[in-house]
Image 1: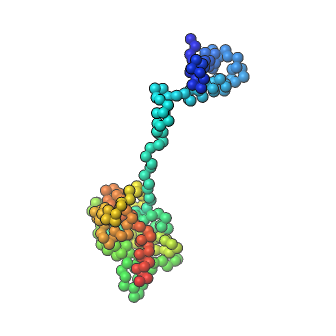
Image 2 (image 1 turned 120 degrees about the vertical axis):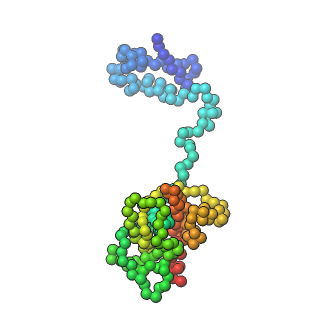
Image 3 (image 1 turned 90 degrees about the vertical axis):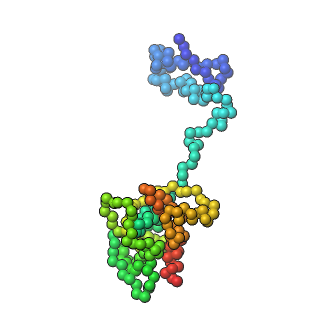
Amino acid sequence: MSRFISNPELPETTVVDDCWSRIGSSGDSSCPLLAEVIHCRNCAVFARAARAFFERPLADQPPQQRAEAPSPLETAPAPETESGVVFRVGNALFAMETSALLEVTRPASIRRIPRRPDSALKGLVNIHGQIEVAISLADLFQIDPTATTPEPRRRKVYPRLMVTRWQGRKWVFPVDEVLGIQAFEKTAPETTDAARTRPRVESGFSEIVTPYLSDVYELDASPVGFLNAPTLFDGIEKRLLS
């Protein structure tokens, strides 16, 4: 028995004979066109029928609903993220945008600068033969450098020097540990200053640290203060020049 496929581009009484299943490659191969096209998939009749099949209206769905039906790809947009290198100072975790980081290196001897009482100015350190300024975030943020994270650690941790560059100037930060680069999902912006600062204070960061943060994220149930790079580096420069 012959089977037929309706063609929506033609009048309702017009049908397309699925000859490929009778006399074609899927049938008895008696079609005279097979000598030229070898297989039905190369035949123009088969191509027209396939096009008609895929362009047919969806069953049991009015045209206006088809036009308004959302595509599977038209889902909620992917959340915006920002990447930062996560590090620890005392018992506090911070993140700094990756574009500001040049390298992470082993600790080196830091020489104090005479007659500079500011404790945040750690001193001068040799990085690949270049003398750079080392800044203590522990002193800048008034964090106890001997404080440790409350959870037990089963792995060794190593202090590091984070070498950064911002607006052409290098700064070196001694830190207690570098955990690596992490992508954080950005939170929706708050509408008031009070709302913006509230989660930072509740996350355990002091009012001294809060102005330097652009957001607070969570990593393994611990708060991570994402540093606002312009505020941090501009604040350091102004403090040292004052």
